[in-house]
Every structure is written in structure tokens, then in C-alpha cells.
Amino acid sequence: MNMGKRFLLTLLLCVLGSTAFAYDNPRWFNMPISVYAPKTAQGTTVMNAYRAWQSASGGTVRFLYRNAENLQPLSNITIQFSDNWISGKPYSITQKYSMFSERRINTKRGFYYKQTITISRNDRYGKPYTGNQLYSIALTAAGESLGVKDLNLDLDKNKVTKDDITALNSVYKK
Image (cartoon, rainbow, N blue to C red; front, side):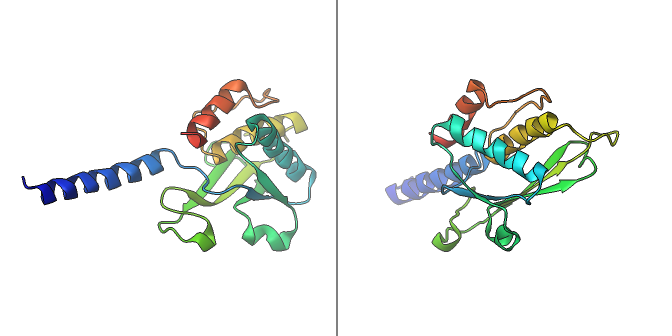
């Protein structure tokens, strides 16, 4: 194989490898990440969960909090609520990626562009969650929205753990 073909093959493998890596470890490209939640008690609970992640991360992740409805379309993460479970879970996350690197949209291949997080106000039987249970769900959803995988939903969870931060750092500090 001549030198030119080897170079092209090596270049192709590097490009394909980095693309796969980006999709295996999705994360936000720029900080702060803007988070919109409605002006409600539940919205405040979710914002407090994001504040807990920011504080525990030691600056790895930072957020810009918004609750004015006109800023919702400009936000990276939009929080909304449902009275029912979503696909058999107390929350769901819909993610959008952009395939192109354009500075004006602060994203590139494999990085989150926008997310919508829908959180149920009620358990699977229709009984409203307590404030503490909703906070536990919000902590888990916030971690997943940052790219932290394999978080177990624990309705008694009331803080971001050292293991959570280790997982977060494995996503953002490579």
C-alpha cells in the first residue's frame, strides 16, 4: 500500500473514531447551559436540582436559569410537567443534536443542542409526588440531561453524590 493510501486510511479511521466517541459520550459544548422552567413551585424544585449539580461539580457545569416564557425558545434545556408518567417512567428527555459546527448555535457533531425534559407531577397511580420525591426525580433527570448515564432513580435521593460527580467528570474532563 503506498504512502498516500495509508495516510487517507489513517485519516478516515481517525474521523470515524472521533465521531463514534462523540456519540458515545454526548455532552454540552459550551457553558453556561441555559435552563428554562416555568414559574411554579415544581419549576423551582427542578431549578434547585440543577443548582445542586452546579455546586457539587465545582465549576465543571454551569447554568443560566430562566423562567420568563419569552426566553424559553432560546434556552438549551426546557423543563415541562405532565400529570402522567411518560413511557413508563416519571420523566423523559428528548434530545436534539446538530450535525454541523456553527459557532452561532454553540454546538457541533455529537454535542447536545436542545433538550426537553418532561417530569410527571404524579406517580404511576396518579398520586402527587411530594416535594422531596419531585426533587429526587429532578436530580436524576438533571444528571441524565448532562450526559451522565446509568443513574438509578431513588425517590429518597436528596443530594448529588461523589459517584455522580465522578461520572460527570468522566464525561466533561477527558
